[in-house]
Amino acid sequence: ATTTPPYAEKQCASIIATALDLRRDIFTADITDVLRAGTTALKSALDSVAAGSAKNVLMVASDNRQGPPKSEAERNSGDGAVAFIISEDAVIAEQAGSYTITENMMDTWRSAGDQFVRSWEDRFAIEEGLERIIGEAISGFMEKEGVSVKDVTKLALYSPDARRHGQLARHLGFQPEQVQDPLFGRMGNTGAAFPLMLLAGALEDGSPDQLLLTVAYGDGSDVLGFRTTSKIGERGQGLGVSGFLDSGQVLDSYETYAKWRNVWLTDSSSRRPDPQSPSVTALWRESDQNIKFHGGVCNQCGYVQYPPQRVCVECQSRDDSTPIRLSDKLGTVFTYSLDYLAGTVDTPLAVVVVDYEPGGRVLCMMTDREVGEVQIGMPVQMSFRKLRVVNGIHNYYWKAVPLRRAA
Image (spheres, helix red, strand yellow):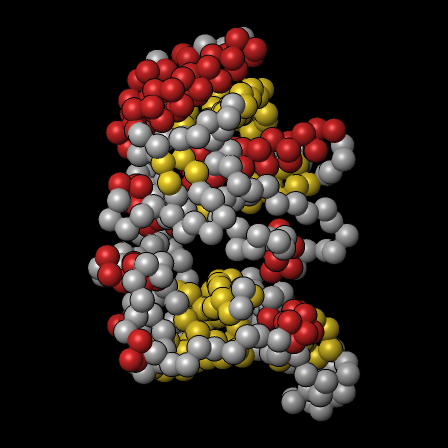
């Protein structure tokens, strides 16, 4: 679910499924073009599992909307993604009702070809859009489900900025302790992913038998209720929203941000020639090694090679190996180089050789790093990244990143 898909005509969910090395006999779908896409996808997943048409559903919401340079919209926006698994097994939160309002509202929009989000006059957008529609949706949910404001433990509420978030929560009658921290000072408005990232944050801190409300907005409003179960204490110990924010790095300047966003171009005199368009045939042929990030483990001696080879360099056995996924394996930096002349915004370009715990060695780029912290023996993990876009083809590959730890 997103409002900023890389392709207008090509499925994004298939790319995610391939990168995650999922089976081919699965149903995938993209839900796009509205800020409610995240909650729409989540409700569709919940309905599919409840109806028995699916046993397990992985739902991903992601966005990187842009406001005009130096604008309030740019200042309040952020990039973010969140994923949920919807299943009848090991349930930490059960659906506790839903309510939806659909209304054609022209308050924010982005037409085909627009890089930046457009918006109408603030007072109209807030009073006749956000406050009125969300207020009606929450009132409708509470009347339908027979609950009141005081029954809600945490409210994961969509809002374009921090001031209006607090204003809207008060307008709806919620106390400050009932409202999930929107993290505007650290994360910003992450579009279709925003209310679901707040829901994830509420689940991180949740305890059994709490009522959580997730409220999305965009051409109407979705309100989804969840009741935490006794299994919430058994959830995985991943980084979560707070951990990922703690492990992030601050850019050194607005100029760096603007270059990454292609708002400002780098000096053309120092740029290399534009890269050639990738071969679609080669992308398809090498999908297992480049997107699934498969190596090969020798069935005779257990030696791991990347990319997979017909002949084992250790025992010379031929055509006798099994694929092994390296994308979820931890590794250490064997050696590295820092290239200050490479044609990249991320100067210097860090290139590392990574040794993996089960075996295997890979040459790749490193990102999300502080130059002074790159060293031999550094623990790393892999991250699926976009390398470049040429002739409309988005080229993805895996990069090494420092092992993420919460501060």
